Picture (cartoon, rainbow, N blue to C red):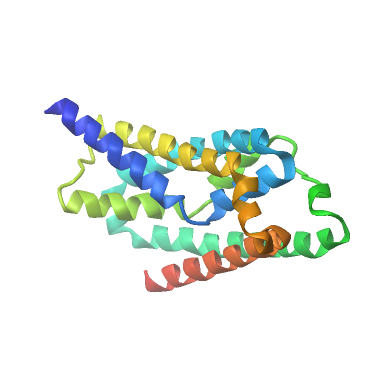
Length: 211
């Protein structure tokens, strides 16, 4: 019975992180951007760095589920920070979009030297990670699907890291194939990233307003 519960939490943690990053977002978009600018190896390094904060973020969300329920103002603060972070990234990508029209797509310079540390930083400043795990794990616990106690929390979190790395690895290794299928996105990738950041900023804003 214990082994079945551990396996159950491992599968749920993996699937939640995998599906959570499947659609375009901050980490997936930046992974693609890194792969296009520096190659798949550097994008994989970025992915390795990006999954480390997930261990901390998911642990905080799961261990503090009851606390967050009684203090919704904390999630509101995270969402407020997210608005400014995503707006800043949107402006940054817009700037890159308009400046790189002067050169070929393949000539874009990548300013961050250490992709691993860049992934660590981008993932760490992602203020929506904790609310994401908090919201869905609280819902699953409410329905009796998962147990928010050790060792299940650790199993869930480690599996979430593996799930996140799997999808980011896919983006890193198949970035050119993904973009090659859609030439419009390939020609205007920075603009697409900027639009995604604007959408995320709007989403974070309404999340903050509704709390």
